[in-house]
Length: 383
Image (cartoon, rainbow, N blue to C red; front, side, top):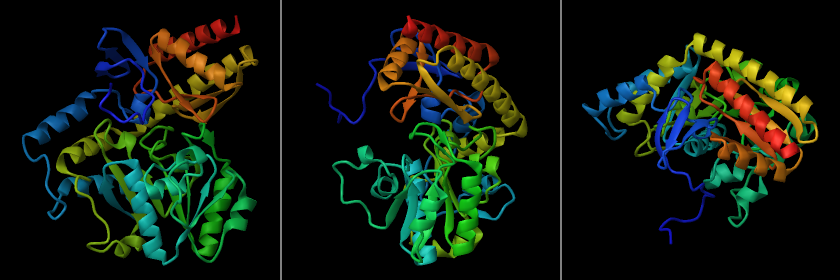
C-alpha cells in the first residue's frame, strides 16, 4: 500500500544522485536524462554555481514574508525585464504564474473573457485548468471557471470569430509543450499580435516550458519578434528550486495594488538566490550553443524520420525543445520502454509524440549517444 494519492503514473526507478545530464538511481544504474525533470534543470542537475548561491543564502535568511523589502526579488525582476517595460510578481509554480496572469488581466481591463487554444496547457488549478482546452485535464472537475473560449491553434479566423468586446486577453504558448511540441505558425502569431493591438486585448504568453533559454532565446516569443503584455515563467527559472514569475507591462502595474494578490512562499530569499544565479548564467554564449546543438539534433532526428517513415510521422521543435511524432501511440509507448531499458530517460507529449528536453548543457558526445540509442530503439521496433 502507498500512502500517496495515485495522481502520477510513476516509474519504479528512484533517483539517488543527479549531475548535469546524468542520473544515478538507487539501484546504482546511471541514465542519460533527456527530460531535465520536465524542462526544469536547464543548466544541468546540481549546477555548481546555483548550488553555491543556495549555500550562501542558507547562512543568511531562508524565508521572510512579502511584507518586507526583498532586494533579491528586485534584482531578479530587473534581469527578467531586460531593460524593457515590465514588472514582476514572483510565486512558486507555473500554474500560480498563470493564475496571477489571469487575475491581472481581468482586473486591469475590467473584462472577463479569454481566448485560449486547443491542445494548450496552462496548469491544473481551476484558472489554469479552465484555460487548458483539453478534456482529459478537465474531466471530473467541471464546471470550469466561466469566460474561456477555445479555438484551434494556428487558425486566425477562429480567433477573430471568438473575439468579443468582453475579451480581456488571448493566452497561448508559442510552442505547445504538453500538447505535442507544436510550434505556432509565425504568421499566425504576427496576426494575433496585430489583433490584440487593434482591439485593446492583452497578448498573454505562457513561457513556463519554453522560457529560460530552452529554444535558444531567453524567451521563446523572442524567436517571433513579439512583445507580450503579460508572460509567465517557472520550471527553468530556478533550475530545480520552485520559482515562478508573472511579468506584466508597467501600464498594468497599478491593477495589482496592495492586497489584490499574494503568496506565502513565492519569491522568498532562498529561491530567489537560485533564480538570480540562473539569470546570470543565461548568456548570449549559452543561447548560441543551444541553437547550434538544437539544429544538429533536429537534423539527426530528421534523418531518422527518413530512415523510419513507417514509425515516424514527423519531427518538430526549436532549440532543445524537440518532438518526434510517432505513427501510433503504441509505437511511442514501446519506444520509451526500449529507451529506458537502454538507460535513456524521455518524455511523451500529446498522444504520440516523444518529447526531448535535455539540459541545455548537454555536450556533443552525449547528444551523439542519445541519437545512437534512438536509432537502436527504432531498429528494434522495425525488426
